[in-house]
Length: 150
Image (spheres, one colour):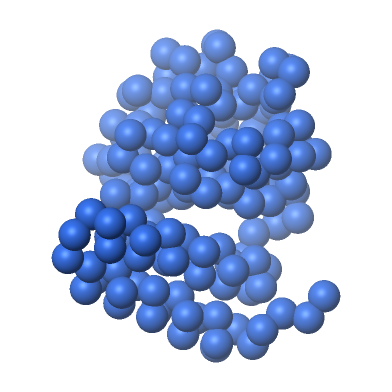
């Protein structure tokens, strides 16, 4: 499948960021945030910045998934759209629940976090992953995590 040139995708991402910077009310900001997410995801997919087995999750300040990409169906048994609106607690396996809060605070404090996390597949089965996470990316208030099955 042919992808648009990367410079065009990067320009679209930057244009969406500028729109977000200029937004003046909640409705404008929400629409601009969605435009940034879509442009950022398109750029990352075309640039090959994540591996074929890597799931990318974007969550907001309330720990709610607002974007997902990658092989979510084959790894978690859930479509990317099925992940939208779910919290980090919904996605993490039961044995991980006590670790989520402290890990979230570490991410906010340091800006980055790496480690392992067991996610919950659609059928409840554990999906062990290694992850890297970054706070305030691709916009302030968002957090990106990249999960690879191990």
